[in-house]
Length: 76
Image (tube, rainbow, N blue to C red; front, side):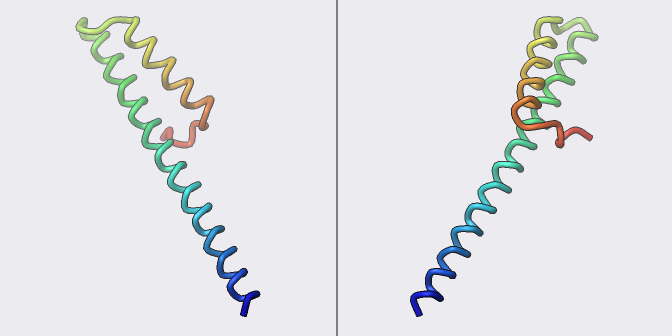
């Protein structure tokens, strides 16, 4: 009976670990998508004359930092 409980506990822990990994992955993809939208908005504002090149550059740097930390799998 103890062997069964140990296997069940291992399986549960493995499932929790896999679930956390997937959650982290989804959150990173959402954050990357949000940064991409911010870059697009900053660029659009700059082109229309209501934004600055500095804001666009900051948005680009934030996106590049995110890609360096997580990868670019969220990009279309």
